[in-house]
Length: 227
Image (cartoon, rainbow, N blue to C red; front, side, top):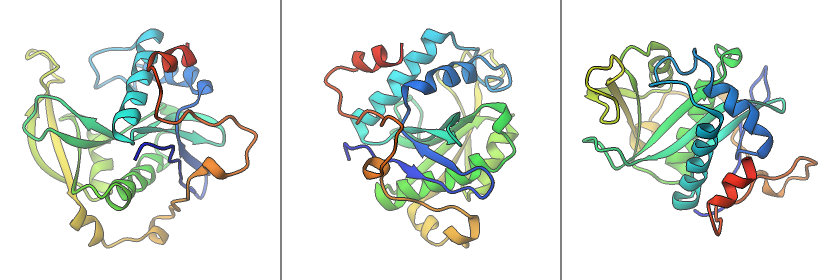
């Protein structure tokens, strides 16, 4: 699935859009990763260069797998990232595809993570035809765990994150999962949750620049693009 595939989420209050990252998202992306509230359950804050490196890895995920985290766009403003990511960690449940979300604090508590996650799960199960999706977080991160539970994911186990030192309080994580069969048997529908999944925006008329497709000749091109 090596193509640009934007997803539209119509949120009653915010009119939010899930789309590929654009160059103008760089400042917001850096801001997000320099925020202590956002990074509370990460090992530390990221420098601007480290944030650009993360953008490059996101594009690599799109290039390699045909999917990846989207930018959460709220009325033209970068609100965070949300989507699917390939998991290659040395953990018992890998390889797997992970649901992830990270928002700038002023966009918290508006339902964006929950509604966007529902759209991402639908994309993973209905478009990518994945059998299972996972999500994980630091054990103490109740805010993130609440989103997983709201969208119907089920707690499976605890595990120690291999990239975090043994002495760190962030090392212990929890794993949540959902299977495609459970998604199709869920008790809610698109209309119940107020989310509309749209067709690709690639063919929509717009004055805004389009994001790059996921097939780059050289990933360094992406780094130059955001620098």
